[in-house]
Length: 275
Image (cartoon, rainbow, N blue to C red; front, side, top):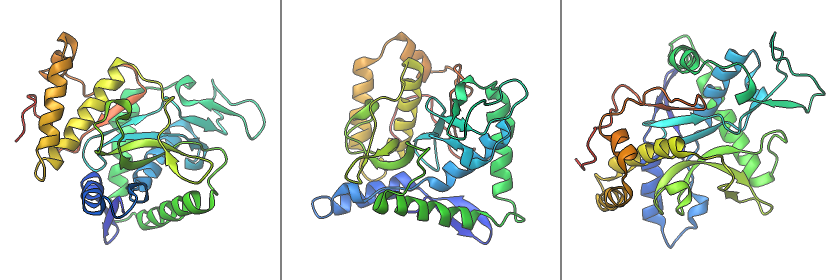
C-alpha cells in the first residue's frame, strides 16, 4: 500500500492506516495479513533528510528512525534508537572507522528548533512546485522495501524501519488495529515488531494519543473498536492520564526524543467521545 499520492510535483498524504485496515478486513482468512502492510518510507526519508540537514550529515547517515502512529494524520518521530554515521560537528565529532556511529540522543539537540522550524520547512519544500524529487524518493522507498523483504538486501547499518502493520497488542495498541510500528526483519524474511524499544510513561501517552486518532478514523466504518478502547482507558485512568487528555498542553514533548505531529486539518478533541 502506498503511503503517498502525487499530483504533479506535489506530494499529498493518503489515509494509509485506514487503507491497510480496510484491506485487512477484506482479506482476513484469505491472505496472510503479514503480506499486507503500509509503507511510510517516503515520509521516513523526508524526516531523515531534515534530521540529517540539522545534524550536518546526509540522509543515508541517519538510521533506525521510528515513526509511530497514524501516518498522514497524527504520528510522532522517535529518536530513542536512532544512530548517526559520519558526524563531524564542532563539539561532538564522530571519532572512529566508517562503521562507527553515535546515538542521536547524545548529539547536541534542540527539539524546539528541529520540530518547530527545520521539519516544517522540509515539509514545505517537499510540497513546493519547484521540488521534483518527491517521486524519485517514493520510487526509491518502494525499491528498498522490496529488496529488504524479498532479498534481505537492506542497509547493513540499519536494523529498524517503520511499517503500518496489524497490531497483536504490542505497546498497548489494540489487537487488529493497523498502526505504524518499528519493525525488523527476522531470519526467514518476515517483518516483526521488536520488543526492546525503550518505553516510559510519557511515550506511552503519545502512543495512546495516536491510537485514539487512528481509531477515530476507523470509527466511520466500525465504531466498536473505538468504544472498546475508550472503556479500556476508563478502566486504567489515573489522575495523570486524565489530566493529559482533558486539557494538558502536549504540543511539545518534554523528553526531546519524540514529537507528535498533527496536520492543521486534524485536531484531536479534548474529550474521549466518538463522533
